[in-house]
Structures are given as structure tokens and as C-alpha cells.
Length: 266
Image: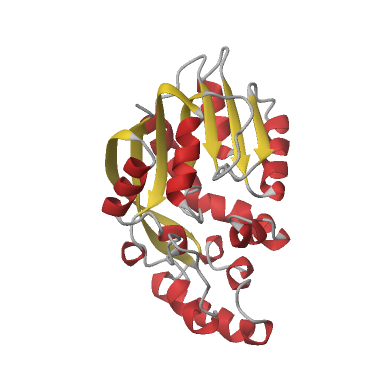
């Protein structure tokens, strides 16, 4: 099954439970994605890898009256979380569904726009995935998404301290070994979008500095791939790694280097 590794990871109960912590780290990017997408009243928008639903909810307010947002995520736990948040907010015109957007058609299309906040980096076959997204857009439809710049520019990521403890993954052809940084190489990402049929591709680099508790990143969900008998050692290595970012009050300085891509269906 396509994206089986990601399906297991994002449906893990611990990963879902820790997600609200991670959102404190990533939520600051929402306004940048919304500004790039430029949603208008009446638009229908597909949010890919919608997670806890924060981006979908922000866009849903802007497409009223008459518009709607469908958030699609491979994680049923994330879909449940987002659905509960939408109900609590009494949000209009927004729904969430469990779907693998690499291969599935999401009900409610065709869409005026597609978007994502760090949700399009994990596909087994990115060209196929973006091609499938493009087919669900109306002629002239737009995509706007945020992804990380390369790992070397995001030194907060816990891969370096955990690498000695994690078995090397078996990767499918075409899948990047860099996980969340799979679209970090702007030239490669442009090539993926072009091969998927997108046109008028733009890329805007972004940088922001946040002071946050270390557990927005350094939490137990990062240890899922570590063999159980090595988890305590891995956790210690991760804590020591994050000490370099920590100030006296315990908060850590995280420099986020990400990028916004936009493209049109053509």
C-alpha cells in the first residue's frame, strides 16, 4: 500500500496526542500560506495533510459566504481532532476526511485551490501525488503550500542526535530519505511540480525565530522509530542536543527556515 510507513506513523496514538505541542511551533506559518493562496468568498479549497485543522479553519472564514474547505489527512486521529475543533468553533463550510491524497479523489471537488502547511513532503511518489492534486483542481486553479528549506538550514530538527539509534529505512524509488525536508531542494521541488503538470511555479523563502519549550519538537513521538532498548539513550542524546538552543528560563531558540511554493493548474 502506498505511503504505508507514513500511514502507520501518523496514525500512532502518541503522535496524535503530541500534535497540539507541535502546532505551537508550526501555527505561525498559517498567515503566510493563507496570503499566498488568496482565498476568496465562494471558493472551494482542498487542504492536504490538514492535521489538527488550523489552516483549514483559517481559510474557511475567508471563503464565506458560499465557499467550503475540505481537509484531507492520512491520519484518522488527526481528522477526529480537526473535526472536534471545527465543531467547538462552530465553523461554517469546513469538513475533514481521512484520505491519501497521493492516490484518492477527495469528495467535494473540483477545487478552486489546494493548499498545505507542511503536509506534502511525505509522499512515496511525489510526482504522482501532485499530479493527483492537480487533477482535482478546476482549470486555472492554484496550489499554495509551505514546506521546509533543507535540513542544514533547520538545525532544530532532531534527526542528527537520533540518527545513531534509528535503523536505516528502506525507501521506495523516488521517495526522499530526508523525511520532512524532502522538498527542501527548491530545484527538485520545481521539477516535481513541473512533471506533475503545474505551471507558473514560484518560490518564496521565509525565515522566523521563535522561543518555545523544547518539547514542541523533542518529545516521545520522535522516538517511535528507535528500538525500545535504546530509547532512554536516544532521549538523553536528544535532550543534550537541544541544550544548545536553551536559555536560562528553559525556552529554546528555534530558527525556522521554510518556503512557500505556488503554482497553477494551467
